[in-house]
View 1 (cartoon, protein in one colour):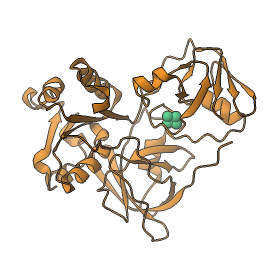
View 2 (cartoon, rainbow, N blue to C red):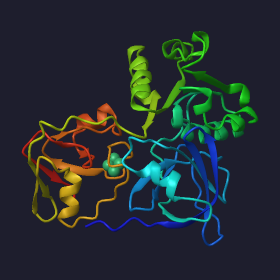
View 3 (cartoon, helix red, strand yellow):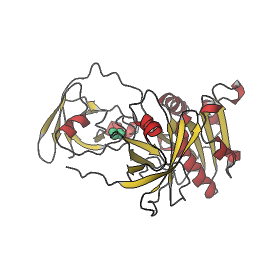
View 4 (tube, rainbow, N blue to C red):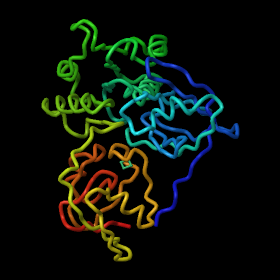
Length: 323
Ligand code: FES
């Protein structure tokens, strides 16, 4: 069985209102030491009051060694993570976090980087913009939001050294300033890499437009931070077999594979529980998963040698897991 993931203790050094329903937390090591280095696009898993664990992208410059900054949208429809940050965390609160992990890195060989953020999805792109600007690399950042009052980090972006590369688009503004996804994608050179983060509808629109224009998958980089609810009404039962021991675990229709594994005593790392963060990724040695995640690429899903048990199920009656 896997070991529990290590955690770090951090203290909330400051909590700021960044926009309507959006706050940022500046986290420093609780013992006053430095924090592990991170690269642009990385996130941390934050253990919140109430027991939830949620992933949040780091949005400060990766050159910072003494702090992590995260931005959090209060989402009334969430399962409690964002509300806990807004209501139960304040300056001085000590939290446990995971070390930074990066499933959304910058491509080292891009001629140009096109960063498209929807709403709070700007956070990993902020760290990317900071890094790219510090390296003198070619990039542009487009931020699409519902309105100016719901747009976080405007002051920081307005005063950044790279402000001329930043474009704001407001849904309630004039048509001429709204984000024209297809036109923005079309204007780029063949060596451009696309990075997109935001609500699922925004991400689906951007990635769909890019694929329709023939962008190859290796130039598309994305990070979902939440997923739309899946209709689970038709879900059936299936079995998981533990390859190392032969143990068979039944997954009931109303249960996720992850819940069944946890109930059987397996300590599978997890965070988002929505198939977007990749934390629970588990190898599959036999059987066919029914992939429901937004983390694996279409090619990785087609290989059927790994799946995300927090959301994905099985097309075959049994999956043999690399555990
Ligand atoms: Fe995030 Fe499964 S816990 S993908």
